[in-house]
Image (cartoon, rainbow, N blue to C red; front, top):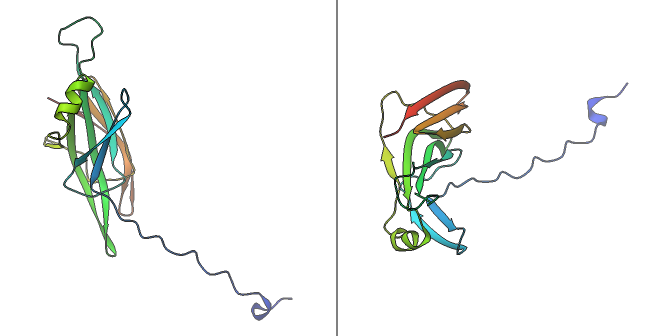
Length: 154
């Protein structure tokens, strides 16, 4: 029979890594492989992003009409607690590279407000189909979620 005193001591715990969310947003133009930095208002992580393609509104057939990047939710650790978010932001993207270079410095995230927004959460997923943003699951404090929200975007 072994006594507890005969056991070697347990290994020390791994060092804690301090997570610091960033409040910046970078865009990569896939045609020119150039990065541009945009400023944001709230540092967070655990949010979701979805691409909303804009409907074709004219021009030559097959012409890229741009779209919007939609960001939802997330978490920001603060001391021993955290702030959870349930806000939606959109970034309108111009249809071509020339417009992107001209407008990138002026571009920024805009808050989208709606009725019946999903509850505050992080580690969820989202997808856009047509003009609807879907948000599924995630976590909030000690609760795990398995709900699905659908929000019509204007």
